[in-house]
Image (cartoon, rainbow, N blue to C red):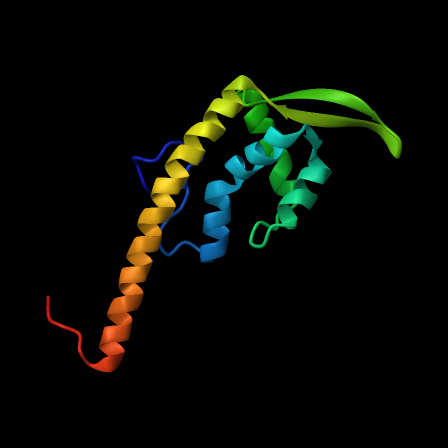
Length: 139
């Protein structure tokens, strides 16, 4: 495990542990939830719907409820009950000031992180292309 990562920031990713997309989703889901809540308060089912609309972020209520519970316990989100036209009241989740700070910190790190990964992947692609042409140099 990456010991230097902060909780929720790709720290749960382990080399060779399962499907790559699953590991990536697990590493960023918390902050994707915070990003959705930054726009407006939502209830869990709507969060699942919004996240599932994004390619690669398909998730379920079984994943979201424990995550929302932890975010609430950690002070990242607050909850309120609001009436629903379609049945019983719904529990809405809203971003707190601490949640906003966590999201802002993630956004600042995400850009640097993805640029570095993209650069390494471009280099690997270029090396692979050189190898396919037979002009790969010994290092």
